[in-house]
Amino acid sequence: MIGTDEWVKAIRKDFPIFERKVNGHPLVYFDNAATTQRPHSVIEAVDQFYRTYNANVHRGVHTLAAEATEAYEMAHKKVAKFIHAKRWREIVFTRNATEALNLVAYAWGLHRLKPGDNIVTTIMEHHSNLVPWQKVAKWTGATLRVADVTEEGRLNLDHLRSLIDEHTKVVAVTSVSNTLGVVNPIPEIARWAHEVGAIVVVDGAQGVPHIPTDVQAWDVDFLAASGHKMLGPTGIGFLYGKEDLLEEMEPFLFGGEMIREVWVDRATWNELPWKFEAGTPNIAGGIGLAAAVDYLMQIGMENIEAYERELTAYALERLKEVPGIVLYGPDSAEDRVGVLSFNLGEIHPHDVASILDYHGIAIRSGHHCAQPLMRRLGMEGAARISLYFYNTKEEIDLAVEVLHKALEIFA
Image 1: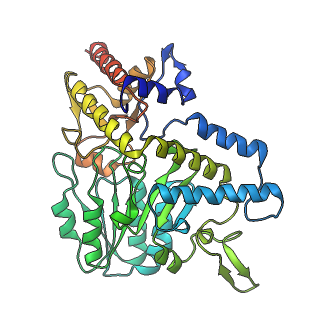
Image 2: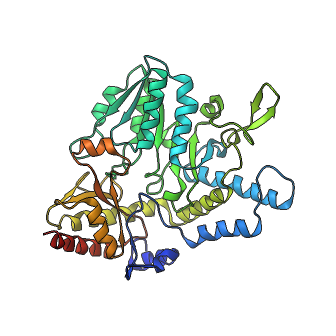
Image 3: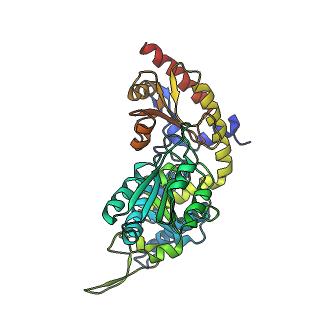
């Protein structure tokens, strides 16, 4: 049964890293918002590629090239199915979500925005969905508008809606905050944007690995995600874009593979998605991402969401027992994933992380690439526990125990 001790133990056996000890303690990995661990199936898929059919794609008629091309294209198809895209050619492989968001900003934003237009985003964005739009606004003369959060840490939807008007061309928003774990109502936001003819650009880096994602039901125009945050290899991510928008856009990078024909003075572009995948791609990464998608679909995203919500509720209650702790974000596990940022009295977040690491517990500390949100919440940084479906309540209990010890050390 999903969420039982037996279920979690079986899951954990799929991840070789949990055989490791850190400082003499079994590894407790609570840094999943930064990157997740990889199951055997992903590691083996990449290993098999390099061992048995390593070749470039779309460039040869020999057996290895054909096998590599088939696997790489199948990876696009699996990702498309995973997020319920209408067509697999709407999936462009990138290095990560950051590159995917930059692709939209450069290839769509730079060519379509002008003075008088505005871009609406939020203060809870990861820098990757803020800084590119800052630059595009500066270069095109468009205005950047930033929606606030409520005191509870949720996106202030009334403020966001008030910023969207007939001059809005882009609404760029995260599906899930990487600092507060808040899940935003993307379908509702997309409807507001489309009412004024704006496009919706979604940073799905923290959402896609944790909650069911349906780009058609949400009616988003673009969505970006990173493979390494969803059990896949590093160096691979993807951009989903509606086919008509991708067809209209100029390429982001130029050179090999993305061309159809080249003359001395001009060139024409390849079909989707290759028009946006210049040069030799991360073939092994794409194949590993496909294996990660297979693994997630086998478990079921609804099951992952349900278990993580239970785990998050438990973590919130246990962490509240720690004297002097300040937790950021909504007080309940409703409409949030297992991202829990906190500060512990006057103890610096890095010191908190170091003490936990001494006991084999890996967390993140710092500004989490969300400095505007940090300032809005009145802090320079925070410690962050981020959960995934291979974590357990026992690991949360251990972290709470060590946090009590940290208070004793700094008393």
